[in-house]
Image (tube, rainbow, N blue to C red; front, side, top):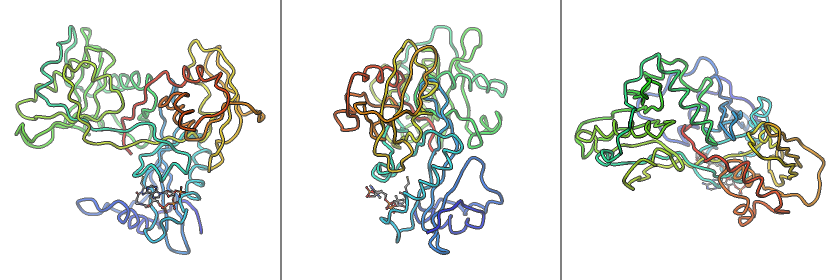
Length: 394
Ligand SMILES: CC(C)(COP(=O)(O)OP(=O)(O)OC[C@H]1O[C@@H](n2cnc3c(N)ncnc32)[C@H](O)[C@@H]1OP(=O)(O)O)[C@@H](O)C(=O)NCCC(=O)NCCS
């Protein structure tokens, strides 16, 4: 079996494998690419001339613990139907994540079609990218903001709305930084991608929130809905102003379909309980390089030295002993000599802890953390300080 990078000559076979795995899209097939995509590293398994497996890694950065962490976002994973169950994913992932490590990508994430595919590769479920529906009429009940109004975003507002996203995202675990070749290259492209971007601005016309939305088809309120791709604010009145603006569509679009995740702070100003999850893409995380991932984290007020072990990584890269030092600035973490009697994480347990998705106590109950519990409080305080949110599907 040959494991190697995709070349343009592989396009026809790669496209066919994709069709077989994920089905066809409406419309004609896309034109054959004339150059390799930027920021997307595609790996193949070939048996002689036959393409039998494929996976791609997108180079992203994610916000975790107040820091941008280089992340390999995995997509387009497929094995030829006749070759499934043959263990082909392990060598493909090994090569793909080795290349990601060379680019400094300490984390890897993906949206699984089934969790069981990726658990044996050290990934665990930490969140999901959701679509929720809120009846438009209920938004009239949102309390009016005091000195915040909405207005349409112009080209010169785009840096300010990106700054709002950055402030919001830096306070969460998980959101992508939305930088790099996989995202809109220009501010104009960002504006052109949607029907409109509405801003919430304060009394000084400072941008404090925005909603990026598509109006959708028709104006029968019983069937039409308005799609909100991003609803982000850094003040409570920002959320109020944007929800109320969305609520003005009640006569022509009966539902707001919001792309969201986790415990969305946008929900805190809704007077009604309706928040119907109608779509969910689970999200899994793998910590490939614990020392790099645990370095430079904001560790405000924490002062401790914690020895920890990771064991059981099928790809081997995470296994080992580490010393995590907190105090006097950002965290530091290095590999050190193996020692007995340390808290020991499974790779999946480390992913859950790192994301702030589960406490040490829950990891112990589920068998993902064993050994002494004296550092559990410190680890929970360091890793559990931010909620997890996923706002981009790939
Ligand atoms: C998903 C897919 C890539 C798995 O291929 P495969 O050849 O079965 O993979 P492997 O043999 O390397 O198996 C890897 C692990 O995944 C598990 N697995 C495979 N398919 C699974 C499924 N549908 N549900 C749960 N676990 C699954 C296997 O049991 C194995 O775990 P194990 O080592 O504990 O036994 C293949 O079935 C496929 O191409 N499906 C269609 C496209 C798709 O769903 N891609 C994934 C996109 S996220």
